[in-house]
Amino acid sequence: MYQEFLPDGTRRVTEIIEVLGVKNGAIDYKTLVEFYVQDNILDPVTGEKKVIGDFIWRNPLSEKLQQKMLKKGATRRELTPYIRIGKE
Image (cartoon, rainbow, N blue to C red):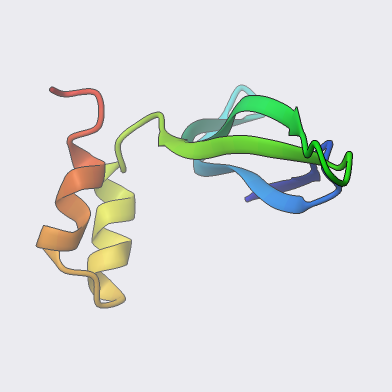
């Protein structure tokens, strides 16, 4: 997980990655979830900045991660939406 401070001062998880291994001495990974900022708005009354955004699934869970999650109690039904990402 990667966290950062956003322009409105909030601290938020902005990226969740899955580490796939090491290739040629470098960590091989893929982004699973990313916080996508749609806009930064100013509150007309307070003048405070507010970040408008949402989480977007970028890539499906690998078979290896699915198996780890199933071993920890997740159900196949719960995982299905995150396996089909990008396949529709």
